[in-house]
Image (cartoon, rainbow, N blue to C red; front, side, top):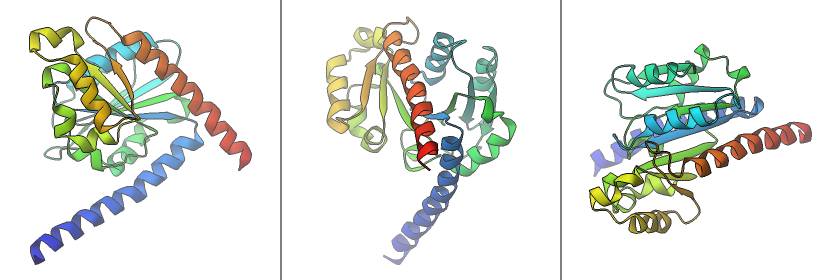
Length: 232
């Protein structure tokens, strides 16, 4: 019992310390009227491909930058830079998530005062990232059809805390033997309030609805934060 109590205490202290930094990040982002998206998924769900397609769809409309999180390599950051979008790679080594302090340090390399949208592509993992607030204004979870219809039920915390769920790779539903409607229903059961999109970043199907929603979210963030500054 004593060992269990100690582990709980340590985890609580880690999350509490993270939350303090996250609050500071959020205050900074809100002061700049900057929409910050925490993009999360299991490995291989297609986050980077979806992010590339999203950036290309809103190219020239908003000033975008990306923070990439991976255990090793800067391969994803290179892909984003190839689109002429600033990207900073955080390599975590053995750590399976990004935390608020990592993001705070990364902000030093970004001209964030000149941005409309900052995307944080988290480490591919459906467990640890769900517990760490980064100061983001929007949590987006990508779920690949190929992962199976039961995925939201197996990892409910991640899906329950999402603002948006993107069901990706719908072009592979039949080949994967997955019932798309069942998967969508499982997402709704776990999180009935999340905004839900079914799409394929590879073929472009469903992408227009998602990118239009994102455009409106960026606009709302700038208007709402402006109104908050006026009231204060």
